[in-house]
Length: 366
Image (tube, rainbow, N blue to C red; front, side):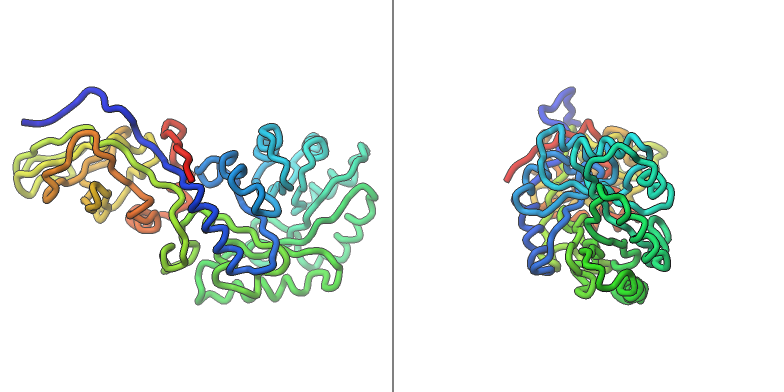
């Protein structure tokens, strides 16, 4: 007889291990000794929760990096008093006022931002980083403009230059020479100017020691996923911070040959039991997960079968007769690296972390 229920206590949950987060920061310190650390916690700390992550690391890092002004303002209003750097910088003159009011450092990467600063007559100290485009061609000034730019930005007496930065485009690939080219270009930018430099993202920290400079900017590695192509997190001594799990809602017997799920894309190869798990693409689990996908139940990996639906997915319970309604099923995290799940979904860990929706509870520990 099929087993089913109408309600199971405890739905999908992302357990956030703050002790693992601090361990991963320790790996940053070990790989880049003596460097200042600007922890990247944009986009809700890659889905882990911006404020709890900031609270957990505030005494152990030198600054936090956010993408946008509103993220930084939210942290200030929540009582975070650490240095905050806004990577996208100001878009309007109002942003300059917010930066002053909340003591935010702005990254200046475009001529329209330079014009905002030159037109600003409100006074009051303002900290800025200058970003250069050394080959990614996304944001940043041409290195050939460096001398002129420094002259322009040093003119306003209220403007304080914090440092220079660039962003590495291909540091995840150790066989790609782009990183060496970018580092060489950055060495030509204002040598001897006395300003601090920040070049290394997570991949740079782990694989390109020449990129460490004065400040490093770890992002993905803080959350326990590998930023390097072909290298899993455990090989880099990184511990998973997020473990995503959901309850087993039902255990069903399915006869041989019967289709399962939307479109009947998977058929039972024999009489078997299927587990219905209470998580789906409405929670952030990828609908397009590949046929090799697995989930973890009672220490055993089980195939994910059929199409992922909005609120549920199914696992093949053959060989696990002890599975019971209410058991917690791990979708990624402890025991099931997110790096593997990302490969099954033909994506990257960033999209999985950031895709976990608001209806998934976050449980913080450690």
